[in-house]
Image (cartoon, rainbow, N blue to C red; front, side, top):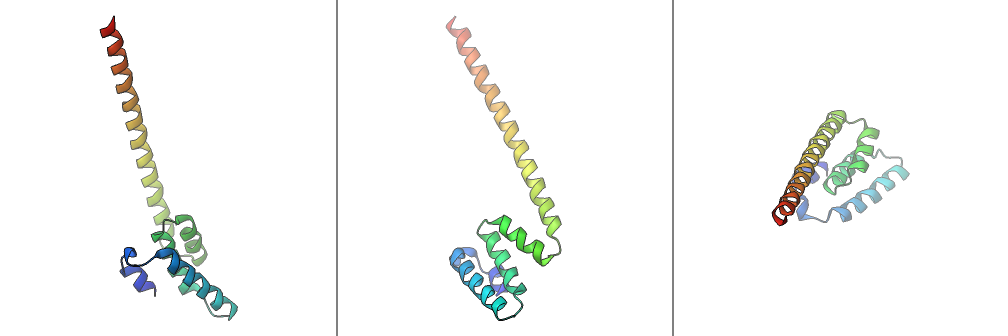
Amino acid sequence: MLAVVRQWPHELYHVPTVIAAVQRRAASARAEGEPDAPLQEVLGELYMADGQRERAVAIYLQLQRPGLFDFIHQVCVCVVRTSFRLALTAHFSMRSSREVACGSILVGV
């Protein structure tokens, strides 16, 4: 199932419906004393596909997934870069607005 989730484009199926089905199967597996780690791995992938990154990271931490901290580092770097770009854009946008406003005041004088 994990291979299918990783290979098939998420647009081909309704991710929340599949999440609900896998959650039910994982609960059933736990109740029967079966290991549910493979199903948890699938849930992690589905949560990522659905934009529920916090839930995915929680599962990956529980599973002690290799590479998790590299992933978290990449996300943090991405957030910092995006925040910096947004701050620069806002700064220069505000600066341009002030210059236009000041210019129109001078023209009107």
